[in-house]
Length: 315
Image 1 (cartoon, helix red, strand yellow):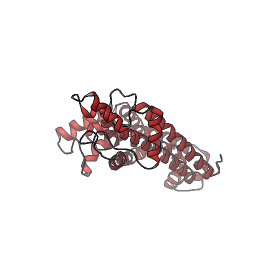
Image 2: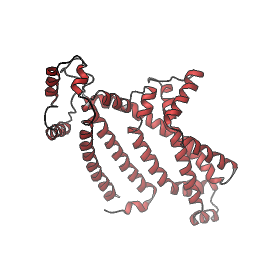
Image 3: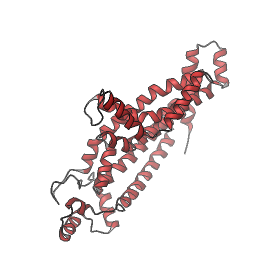
Image 4: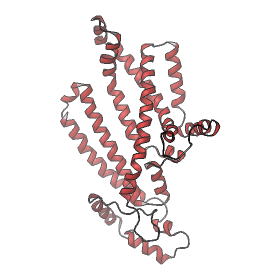
């Protein structure tokens, strides 16, 4: 198991380095000059060139990348371009800005995952126990319908229903527990459909296994057979899906955060792209890659806890 985790960590470092290279190259393909965006339309050529020189944007791309890597290793991500009050003035530290937005995105992702688990897994479990019943057919049909709807459309309908028509939930912003409900539900609903079907399929498959028949023949209670034997052996694909979803949510909440005005990494990334804010973009995306790698390592460790056979995996 240690060998497997070590391999994942080494692959994670390689993934992070490739991410740094790709992000650094791709942000420079965004049309528009950061200096010109900051100075607006009335800027002179001399002013633009001065800001480019001040930010090191006049250097060759390989030199810029080397400076970026060196500063990043020292914990310096540079100053954000978009939060500078005057041209060339010292702005907000990019790393500090990103870290300040991170808790909001984590909160949204975790609440979304919890909602998904609390709804999808019990329904999937009941559907597996009552296969081919009216309940099973109804739940599976609803999951297919919900899973086919884009989350931005779901979000708009939730805003119209609970925010505009009923007026019981805020339609945007943050600051209280009620603010997170609509964006979290918007993120959760499509995943509920996926997790529900996967839970139903895996539990139904495990219930047909010979060791389940043996456990029942020994006279074990139905709840013991279901929880200790069936559900535990069905958990590995569910843990994989939950890990991938959590890793994806941390960097894939862009549409929902913009729709609900949620002050997280997704909204910050969009604002930074519009402002050609290279330092912030070059911190947000690699940070998302790091979190994705960490979550995958934690998923591998969870495999070993659920299935002892995974602990014997070697490089």
